[in-house]
Image (cartoon, rainbow, N blue to C red; front, top):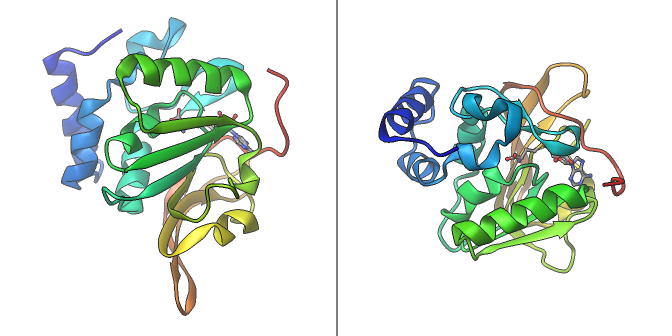
Length: 213
Ligand code: SAH
């Protein structure tokens, strides 16, 4: 499914109403049709502001939450960004319009394979997709200017904090997976780590190890 001008306008209007006001974030979200990332049963809900099921029992995040996270990440055009939790690939596609390079990792091979195909068909050539346990980050590509985690851990994973550049920003949900979690922004400065709590969110859990599919 692809969106028409009316659906796109409504989608962007709703994002603004929900507090996504940063023009670069809105510009990137305008370029990425969420309908391409939602298949089957839920296709006709692609432009609703709700998380939706994707394959491997995972979910594509709610658009307003994707917008808030992208906005909080303050990606600069020269940035190298790591995303943990590729899922459908929607968040990575948005980041690809804002950053120099995006590395995205998922523990489900099926999800990384499908999103890699999609990025290719969309002509998004600055995204590298990796299958693996992203809680250890990507030491061979570190350090990163920005890190975004789209699955909830109880605490920010140590390896990810270590792979964040000084001056870098990491945005992630933290908390118990079956309860309400908090979206956290971590800024790394010469003096140490600075934490801001942004809003309550609900994400699938960050799970250790590779998945079966
Ligand atoms: N950002 C996605 C939504 C992610 S859903 C989108 O835009 O559609 C969360 C994803 O995190 C799931 O696909 C899940 O497989 C993945 N995940 C969970 N634990 C992980 C881990 N340790 N390493 C990598 N990916 C993980």
